[in-house]
Length: 169
Image 1 (cartoon, rainbow, N blue to C red):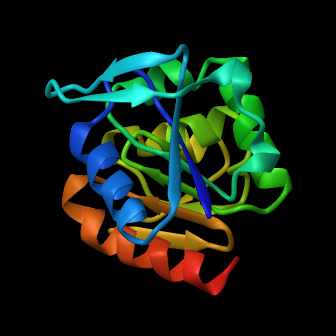
Image 2 (image 1 turned 135 degrees about the vertical axis):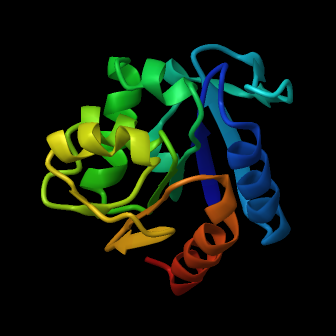
């Protein structure tokens, strides 16, 4: 299984690193896409290496999309190439996982209308303005979409994500 993580500078370190290593622990292949190849720095100073630029991403070659939070999603949500990636995954009903500020990207991509989601409380109004039905709970699963609120929810988020992926949705 191939997982695409979409991020940029300012990601929430634990929200990218913990799921990334959990995916690898399950034997999944993980690629990181950013505005350009190379080092991407998190809010707390950790770095990851992006091996794809957004322009190089071919959504059909991936099984899952993951959008970590932090400050990066507020910038990424305005990028047409990121919106196209999200729309392709949604159109193909592939699993989309997003935590914290990550759902902001989904909202701008226009894929939240009528969907149940959760996110970081401070951005819940923007998510609702995008047509989502917000729930202030640790994890929300709505068909192929799994969302979560914050770093402390990562264990529950990853349990739901791995369960969904093992079912082969």
